[in-house]
Image: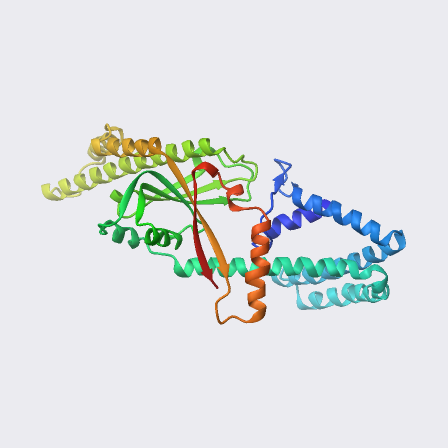
Length: 390
């Protein structure tokens, strides 16, 4: 039962239906073996409280019995859905299964309800509290993400920044964290509007935890440019498996900047090889040669030029770019973390205001904070506050 509670909470957190808690995977082979310290302490306190309140095994059995029968009945309903949607079973079997098994379980459930006032109310009360927590968190989490998608900024925003003369470029590298993988999060224009400055190198970073055991270090960082390239704004997705150890801040910065340099180098080589192939195609077209030379002649000419473009020494622009990144790292890396305050819109109803303004914000402040999940050093952390109205 305890391990089942850990697994359900972990899966609910992945689906965005439970506040952030620390999930520790105890097995490299089996994905489902997890341990959650916060839930373990909560179960310990609840076990002591239930034992102190009920005191006798008869009353505890009444509470336990109604929970077991409810689980059996809900399982029957879910298996019926699986039969219809996944297994594509015939309608006859789909109808017979819940009638036979569900009917028998309903009889047991009705008898268990006779013990409701003698302890059966306990699991129903716990279930109601958990549903309120999960429903509140999921509702606000989804609307918060929709708000970011709706208000995200297109990549053209960076090109517009390049034309602003009152925008200062600060020395160093800025790492802006965002849940969005595409587009620019609304926290960036909010920051530029309040403080008209931006770091000389900006990396918009999204950290994702994947349901696989391990991701090699050379495959963990995915980069791409945000045009225009000369403005040195990058998008980065950092992927972790559940058995990957999150690095300390200094090691994370070294890996991030090292992989960024490697990305710039590879992009430069790819651009050179593309230009080399385009120049060769133009040379063929200008010479007016027919497309009938022998295969041996093509094999003798094309691969050599292609390999020359790949193995040629880096141009000065590439070296200058890498040196610029290194100077930015020497000047210092600043981590920018959005501190979003989610509130209900002004014309929202009373129930929505209670859910968003009080229940959700209480859970957000008292459960695990975002900087505990990311590799953020506190002495170089800059919180950017912004209010989302949903």
